[in-house]
Image (cartoon, rainbow, N blue to C red):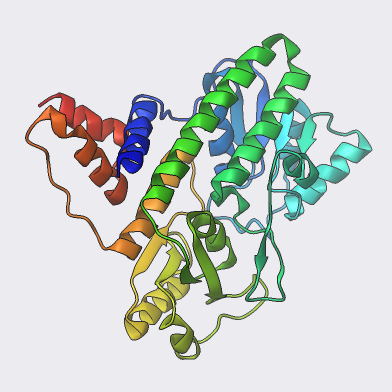
Length: 330
C-alpha cells in the first residue's frame, strides 16, 4: 500500500501546474506539423512553448480518406519536423512521396524512427493476427517513443537549443511514467475485454487488460452482431468503447454490456487541444472504474488527507491540479 501511495503522491506533485494548453508561440520557434491532433497533443505536452505545433487532418474527418490540400502542402514546406502515426494513412504516404521528391525538406518521422525509440505494434488477435496500426498513440510507451523521436529531430534541425529539447522530453517522460506506475498499481493482472474498434486495444493493454474480440474488427470489415458476441463478452471483465465513435457502434457496445452483464469503460481516441497526459489519466481512470467499481468522491476534512483525495481523484478522473487546489484552499 505504501508503494501505491508513493506513486500517487509523486503523480500529484508532478502534475500540479504542468498541464498546459496548446500554444503556437512566436514564429522563430521550430514548426512541428503532425498528421493528426492527438500526435500534436503529444508534441505540445512534451515540448511546450519551445515549439510551434499544428496538425493537418481536422477532427471528425476520416483519416483513412483525407487528402492533402494545396495550402497544407505549403505548410509542410515550411515545417521543421513532421510527425506521423507511422506512415499508413493516405496523407502520410503522400508526405513520404513529397519528402522523397524533395518538395518538402523537413525531418519527417515514420515507423522506423519510432521503433528505434521503443515503439511497438500490438497484434489484432481477433483479425488475422496482423499488426494493429490504429490508435498507436494511446499506449503511453508509444507516445514516449513518438516524443523521443521528435526530440531527436528537433535537436538535429535546431542544435543550438538541443539541451532545451532534451530537458523538456525528460520532464515529459517522468510525467508519463509516473502516471503509468500509479495506474498499474491500482489494477490487477490477467483482465480481458471486448473492445469496440481496434484503436481501443492501445488504451488498455499496457494496463494489463487483454483485448480478445472487437465489435468492428477492422476498417473495411462489417461490425459483428451483438448477439454473436454475447458468449465471449460474458467471459471478459469489461467492454471498452470510444466516446467519439459512431453512435451505432456506441449503442452496440452498450447493448453488449447490458446483455452480458459487464461494465463499460468509455475512452477518448481522438481529441484536440488537450494535453496528452490529461487524456491518459482520463482513459486510465475509466478502465480502473470499470474493473473496480466507481469509487465515491468525498472531500477530506483536513489537508493531511491529501493522499486519500488524490487517490480518489485518480480513480474518478479529476484533473490533479484542480483537485489539489481545492484541498489547499481548505
